[in-house]
Amino acid sequence: MSTYVVTARKWRPMVFEEVVGQAHITTTLRNAIVTQRLAHAYLFSGPRGVGKTTTARLLAKAVNCRNPADANPDNTCENCREITEGRSFDVLEIDGASNRGVEEIRNLREAVRYAPSKGKYRVYIIDEVHMLTKEAFNALLKTLEEPPAHVMFIFATTEIQKVPATILSRCQRFDFRRMSVDEITANLKGIAAAEELHVDDDALLLIAKRGDGSLRDAQSIFDQVVSLCGKTVSAPQILEALHIVDQDFFFRVSDLMKARDTRGAIALVDELLSRGHDIGEFLSGLIEHFRNLLIAKETGSTELLEAADVYRKRYAEEATSFTVADLLRFQRFLGATEAALRWTSQPRFKLEADLVQLVTMQRAPEVAEILQQIEQLKKNYPDSPPLPRRSPSPSSPREDQPPVLPTTAQGRRTENADARRPAVISEKEVQSRWDEFIQHVRGRRISLGSVLETSRLLGIEGNTILIGCPGEFQFSAIKRNREALAEIFQSLFHVGARIEPALDREEQEGQGGEGKPDESASEAEHPAIAALRRELGAEPLQ
Image (tube, rainbow, N blue to C red; front, side, top):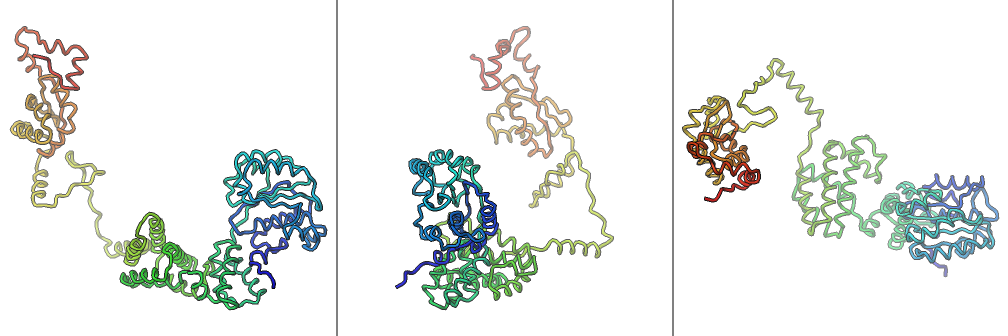
């Protein structure tokens, strides 16, 4: 009975030409072998399942093969067979995650002194090298910089940013790229033909997209599907086996948006969850759906879409129902929904609410249509005079300040009264309503109203209100609150004004008497006493 071998191992590339999607790397390595310009250390970086370790083994076989052909290993000599079977003493594969300490690296430094047993090079392949500790990297530096002539290091990593710069500078770096859906599909199609399996193109496309750029992941999914479906595999079977959201769900969302059917949107969410689909996967697919519509709309072609032919035709037809502005808004909105799902405790409620909002979302007008409508209005009314610009009056607000529009009858009467009021303040009116002003101030600030009661109105100069203060305390209090007093004054008299305090000399002389020195004035001459009165309202003891 033959032992089953998974597809990823059974169909592992045996020569450089079989490495999928990395021609820029394999061509460089083959040229280096032919011209004998091999480096002592290589660093392979890239996402998982794209051929880093496979290429490292091919390089190890190629440099140790006894009968190489066009820089490829012949895979028949003793050295190649030992390396393929993993029993060669000249090629050592080390897992960086489980051998990450400084002691393991010290042991490696001791081992590199020994010459290879059969081949030309002693090759050390360290997978996931970024897992080594800082001390281990430091222990490796000297050996990596000046290794023996028979030693070659090949490092592989999925997180290149974690590898120290001192290591990077001592290696030739090769960046492996993610594989396209077409490349993965072609590889799986060849494997299916060799295995005598009947897998339709739509099924292969679903598997390739599920692999997300990783050939190894796609081959593992391929094994899973074949185990479930047998020799014949179809797209509906893969949807059921992998629990993938059917593409028809996304086209149903588009139909609901055109019909503005909120009830259907809620029913769709219920159906989605009753089938056990993941909400995050559904949103990701819906964003891709609107992306496909955008590409079809802008390019007028469906060649860039990773979709089956039947869906390509539907995208070409559906794209005419939406504008580019709408499709961009839909993608931004769904992206925000996808991000918000990470923090919500009720993802179903969030999806229902946002899907209803998406279905009822108003369509964005095209800028070209708006400009066209403006031009049409100009043609229909060519003799319309431009709107007059009113020159600002001294009491009117500046252009950068929005006018306050009254909405009540009382507000309209106030507006009319303000329009008739002169811009210059009437001193007679202010004097007659000064007590009223003080009461307004007391209603907002009792202490400030008390200060005004002990002061008096000296006069008005233009739009400046002069207030006489009997002492330093009143003067300081009014000066600190000038803006608040001006605001209250404007709310009462409907005219802007400046409030300026001044020491009332007549009041001071009346309090001091004829020829009698003012004791408080003499005390106020000291700076400390003046500051206490001005800032804290201090009064002399009686």
